[in-house]
Length: 311
Image (cartoon, rainbow, N blue to C red; front, side, top):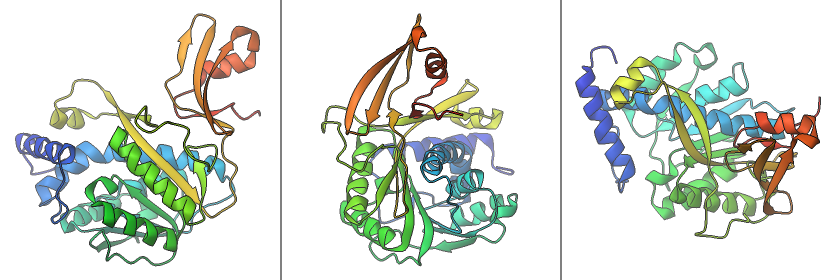
């Protein structure tokens, strides 16, 4: 943000937020110039990183012996997902970031210079849609992208990704519409032969009745003083709500159950809302008489696997 007045950055953030919350045009990039991208990186990149990192960590727990040797970030913008991948699986790998906003790729490349694992990443301008082609790769991430595409382009992109990747991780906003897009992607990946690794403990149909609820999670994001300034916030943190699916052609060991709501801690008991293997949704109560399990329940977060692995 050097050289960009804080007022201009804040104005750019306001405009971008309005764009993302409204009906997003699909014929032009939202990020028009360097000022837009700098503002985007400052206010959205930390939250995108935390959401994608949480999804990747849940996936890694289901496939503990696997490390991707190549990664393609579709619609990656400034590359937050590439940072999340290196945080989950340290070390170098072949990395390609595809986006149609050249200013986003330029700043992403500059930021990535600080990460040795990304020094050889390839930043490539590409229209994300029906005409996209992908080389075979171990891992494809598609984060906060499907909401920018028309329904036909989403379908084609998912088919393209499924043909190219061994593992696909899709992250969308934690809204009812975001969840709907994730479920559509989940169904399409299962049809293509993928196994669901996270968050679901199964590859059967989602047990949530359409229109009654939506599956989403929260990632805690620390705010720097700069972050607070351009967003007009006073808290030192924010909670990023997101929906996701991680699917793979690899053998997986999903969690026995997943905590799908913030645990309710009461005197002598913890209430956990779980998505279970059957598949089903169930609330379970863990009390003091459960001993160590009760202690574990008090430390359990929204989105965690349940029960915890024994040492």
